[in-house]
Length: 200
Image 1 (cartoon, rainbow, N blue to C red):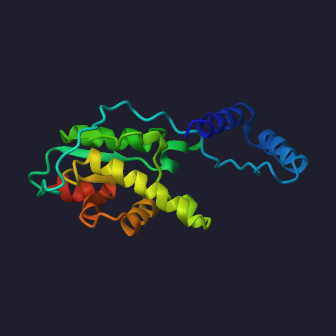
Image 2 (image 1 turned 180 degrees about the vertical axis):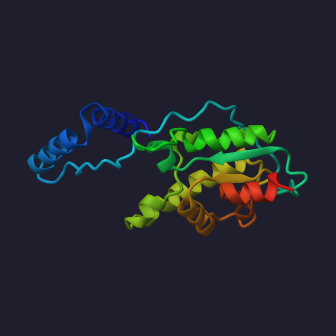
Image 3 (image 1 turned 90 degrees about the horizontal axis):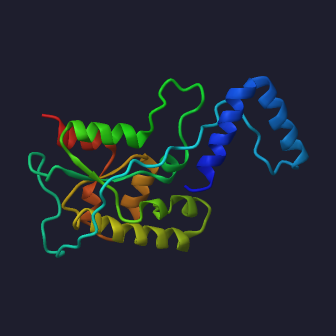
């Protein structure tokens, strides 16, 4: 999520300045000259994602015998937020009326509810592994899942705090592939998290 967001933002800026017709003509020419190696642009190509809002991360480790997840009324007012690779790379399109990022909206909602939000350690290098798995790179996918699982255990204090992943396919891939059976019960989609912990 270091190189692609600035590239997408540059293309989006060019779209805003040049408009659909000129941008389409230039992009089509580049696509043909590049022998199809340069992706064909369209007006709905997203801009680059904003940098993740700064938060205080946790790196403390706890004993594995400690409680994993607590009740709706007593979950510790803390959530581990796992923004997916897509969320960290792609933002809204130029014509999208909603320009706030997914992390901005989720963090804003959590703060209004009085819930502390933390990221897993090394969040910018974390990945659920689904991109590797979908391309047949199963070993690479398993390695990324194992790496992320270790960081989620640290951030959530062995599953004591709920973990929110904002992209459904990533969440399912994690639940299907992480080795810790109890950690699976700490994983939520945003709507599921709100329904489980933030509503009466």
